[in-house]
Length: 286
Image (cartoon, rainbow, N blue to C red):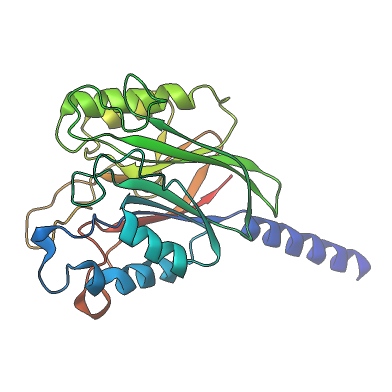
């Protein structure tokens, strides 16, 4: 009986450790606010901000990587996501303007303050001068950047890195060069150091950014769970009745990271969608 109790306690400990080591993560392009095209019911930020928050919180994420965050949406999310620390909203010195779509939408990382300890953080710009805020190269339509944090899991002691980016939406050469920047910067870490890359890549699995990342050892979390066959579009653009498209929003993994679940989140509480993108989520273990 004593031996059985010991075995059961050991099994319980293994199960508890496994559960603690699962990280719920999300990538959310929440859409720039204040666009003239969004001056219709259901698309305005005030119409969808509570829905956006509800959809995010429904997945109970430990880490949320957002894209297209500007002043209004950042203030709202930071106020409402009280259990999280936010990193990556810098300005206005990087912004030529502070309103309209021509400003720089930020890639903001939110992480659970109870779950993780911040070890270090940084930002680099996807250009020939990565240390210069707001710098642009390779015919990119806008300045693009990558924010990152290095976290320590308080439960397991494991350290890992989270990167959040948004590639150019027009120029192919810019997307390629911007991806090369990310691949090169991340390569300074050893292959056994876990890294997770989130973002809107404005390209799919048949395009150069995907090829560059996978050649460098990055793996698409959704593909790891569901296979390589194309799921369909993640940027719906408020147009739902259209042919099957492609995913342009991704969660990539590098090093000893495993995806045990992945989902394209199509929730629309009350018929209102949180953004012109579907959010994506994954459950990861190290």
